[in-house]
Image (tube, rainbow, N blue to C red; front, side):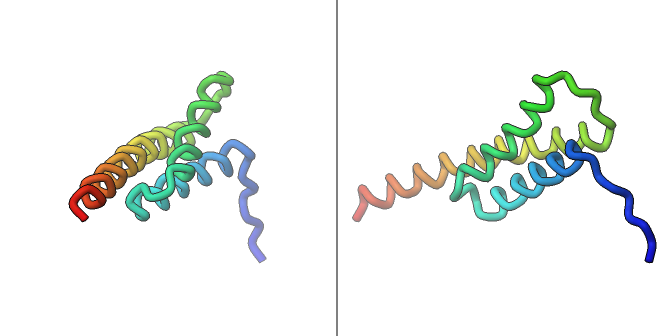
Length: 88
């Protein structure tokens, strides 16, 4: 068996945040908790001043953008619900 490279905790968190951003966008922002996680992890890493590699920085940037897009989709979902509810 080949030895797999062990990921650091920061890499695992970055992967998790990126996955939450993708899930949140795929569900059209229906659950804002996913997008909150996708936004919170990169912000927490940035506020702690941790030295990050380029791959982690890139993944954090993507998850932050994805989380913001998913939150915008959540607002659109709420607007559609309000409009449809008023017409019924």
